[in-house]
Image 1: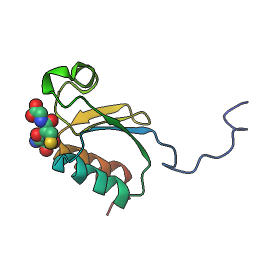
Image 2: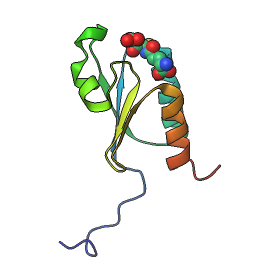
Image 3: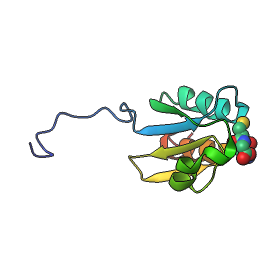
Length: 96
Ligand SMILES: N[C@@H](CCC(=O)N[C@@H](CS)C(=O)NCC(=O)O)C(=O)O
């Protein structure tokens, strides 16, 4: 099927964002709140509680802290809740 024949994909309706997070992590909840406010679907990946056991996250985003996100639609991978919220607003916030 060519791209022209493909069914239209509603903007940002697929879970192309992966959120690396921990239970009861206030920084993660901040990102979750913004994802919800923006109506973005996302997949949660709960990471190892021990910081030293988070090599997979380190490989993907360059840091072991959570939250971290990977956005397959834009190719962005990043950590730091404030930066993630800014990124989500800039990318999906509709210019508000
Ligand atoms: N400045 C970071 C702080 C994130 C943070 O401290 N996350 C905790 C979990 S709530 C963590 O990953 N701690 C392990 C570590 O600091 O290496 C942010 O805003 O995202």
